[in-house]
Amino acid sequence: MSRSAVRLQPVTLRLQRVPGPLTPQIERALAIHGDPLRWAITAVEPGEEQQLTGSVLLIEAVVLV
Amino acid sequence: MPTLLVIPTGIGCALGGYAGDALPAARLLAAASGCLITHPNVMNGAALYWTDPRIHYVEGSALDRFARGAIGLRPVRRQRVGLLLDAGIEDDLRWRHLQVAEGCRASLGLEIGPVVTTEAPLDVSLSQGASGASWGQLGCPEALLRAGQQLKAAGATAIAVVARFPDDSGSAALAAYRQGSGVDALAGAEAVISHLLSRELGLPCAHAPALSALPLDPALDPRAAGEELGYTFLACVLVGLSRAPDLVPLVPGSSECRGFQAPAADLLQIGEVGAVVAPAGALGGSAVLACAERGIPLIAVHNPCVLEVSAEALGLPVLKAGCYAAAAGLLVALREGISPAALQRPLARLV
Image: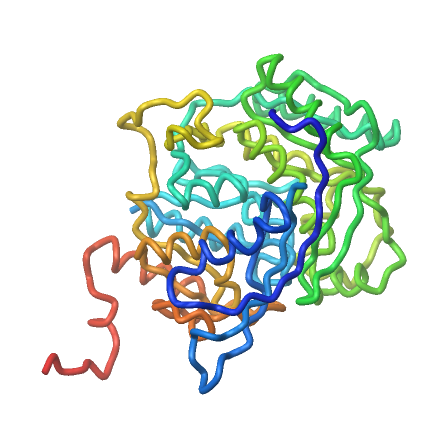
């Protein structure tokens, strides 16, 4: 255990999808808020003309800060 | 053929949204695959449980790490299950939990102990995300981690956690849940507790909430009945953890590599997994995405829940199953090397 103080922080974010695997995109976006403990995509808003790229992912998470 | 079964907790799945009501599906998929890796939400039925040597009981964050290739799973004959009790549990409820542990030692022969109580109440609170999924918070996570470290130092090889959860016996949400609709409000906070402990200690962990007993409800949904048989939710956790596989770090140089060991022949790794099974509307979790990104066949089962994160929304190739019995058929096909497409009509021409 390296942490001297642990705090759990709920995070909700909207992430616009770019080409490539989703997991690294999500982890990069969450890392701005802390160390992700648990996350899931809980909704998807389609992009223009139903394209995957450009769709918006709603991510709910708990991070360690 | 090793297979992952994921039924995310706290999203109101029609099958798997209650304590242990996905167990029959898990037993079926274990029989179909010969080796099923799944998580406590699927297996825990409060006072009810089922053991099957083909089923590996792996807590959610460990399942995520397994799917990413960060850990392997090593089957064991038994674990020594340390019991971690929240200081916020009242004395009579604490005794009920201790007596469940004693009963599991005396009647099932499990190795349980030591028992450690947190230095301060964990202060669990419940919440709901924008999606309707249940989440939760822990006011005193450091007390949880310190108690877990004490147990590990004292020789526990797995940890059962019991935290005092807020009673909400008069709430409309609980009444709806008991009558067969809505979301398990406790599940999200339970997952946060076990994720934190398992990730930080590298041990198999699972959680049971401590709650006051509810008044009798003759209209109780059959799926909720398992949760009202006794005073605690602990027995299934102790049984599940008693043979949960060891979590073996695989990636040298990562934060998870303390005690890194070379892979052994009996070590189960993600590269051996032949399929992952998940609800068709809940494909956006970490383990499922990691498997899909590795090209592991994904079986999306019709199992309504509060989410609509489908294969189409995410652009994932899936094999669709109308129910878990159909998913079992697909697993048998994959296991036997039969193309699932050959089982459907019309069969498209090659050229």
